[in-house]
Amino acid sequence: MQEGKNWEEKLFARLYNMSRIGRQSLPIPTNITVEVDKNNITVKGSKGELKHTLRPEINVVKKDDQLIFDQTKITKSSSAYWGLSRALVSNMIKGVTEGYEKKLELIGVGYRVKESGDGITLSVGYSHPIEYKKPEGITFNVEENRIITIKGVDKQLVGQTAAKIRSLRKPEVYKGKGIRYLGEQIKIKPGKAGKV
Image (cartoon, rainbow, N blue to C red; front, side, top):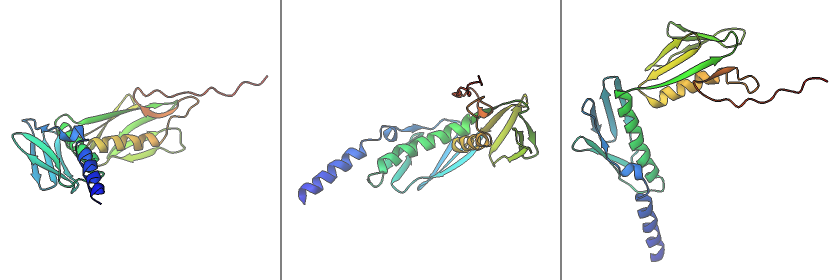
């Protein structure tokens, strides 16, 4: 039994030291404010405000314009949550200072997009146009009726919105028509051989 305990202690000690990202302190820029209330973090900046609740295994302390993350309870997955928590808060800080954006491009004859009252209207080869309502905290900008710029402070929400719009008409593999990320390379399949 004693050997088993020692093995567990060694394992937990190894897990504790695994997160290279989690061990790094996170500097707080001078132009934003960060409030820490137990496991709740609020980040305010020029572009907006974001909130996040940490898992109970993770603790964060604000000290000398830095955030220091640590594990309150060492489990098999706490090391992963340790690094993840630091990365998420780092993304929040970048979001409220610089913001995030994704660009989509419509490829296809007659494919176009225009801004509507609370979102965008897409014509992408269906018998009817598709209305997409923008989520709260997201702004759309349309260029040349075929390029959509999605902006916001929440990295996850920006990426999720872009993925949802892309899924409305994924690029097909023979001609590449559809909605794709700007600059995305689509592997085109060769068409069927012509009749002899």
